[in-house]
Picture 1 (cartoon, helix red, strand yellow):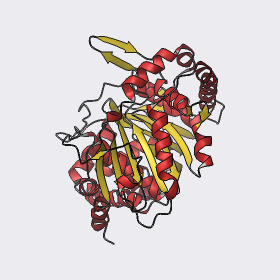
Picture 2 (tube, one colour):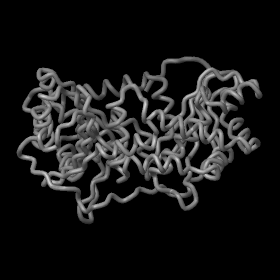
Picture 3 (cartoon, one colour):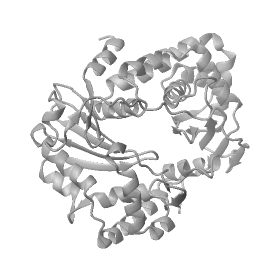
Picture 4 (cartoon, one colour):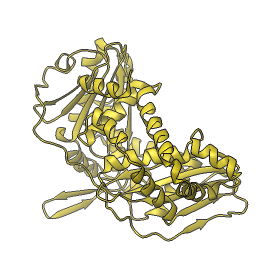
Length: 425
């Protein structure tokens, strides 16, 4: 099947409807799928710590959105996971920087019941003192465990060095002092603001049933809303940053390197930038990339592993590279400068990046979960699957070289890790 046809077919299988209370439903049909995946995404994440009411503002402790996720997992005195498991469904929840998600997989004949259970828990919560106290202990232990994870520790240390004032630099569960300070009133106020049905989208992936046949009967549906989501934009100029280097570069075998991501001239909508930086990362930082293989051979760099991510939101964007090897701290500059010296090969490298991203969307082994993640991105930016495909294909060599030049010229923060260590809080 041609890739273009695949994305057209995804759109043909996708239906957007709304409940009369404002809940948005995104239905993606896969007739041969045995299981069904449901995810209720709430537009309330770890960055949402400021509540506005008229002229007043309340600042919540960090970790409030994640704490709410934990509290809502308890409904009428029983844990939702156990309740769902009894009905053959596996429920999980997770909080990101931008949103909170309640996701489960279910057999087709249990789907209506489990959806009803989840919506009841989300729309009719109980804030019990004992549950809140219990979850405070659970979450503080979760935070302590997270700080023992070296990768997680250095990830947030890097974000803190790049942008110390940004909520992105705080672990989504918050800090111990935040959890101790959090009150039931904070949770109730956060819930009242963040969990309005209009801030929620339900994704239903798999099967061929019509939407109305698998939803609780009390949810009356209407067609697509006339409202069009506003495309989110990122500031064209990132904050000024001074080069910083922590640790001993001479004996380093492991390096974290970070830099601010900037926008393209006249093309700084967030979705475009996310896709373009994903493509650049696949070209520069994938072990299988022809560019990486060429650099390793011609520059004799002893790079053992590479992984890169580019978290991005309206608050700003970052590129974070984790590398291992004797020359790992030099790789990001060597790679960017190599591309600028070999511009004649840029088109071939760009095509590799595009194909790598499209193949990741189409051929991922965990396809239903992967489809949800791309459907969620398309929904966030009011973009069809085919528009996503065209966006990727429309990236030009000029766009690619501009972003490579950004990597080459950006101020950078580097953390050198000389040996494995247990990281304390």
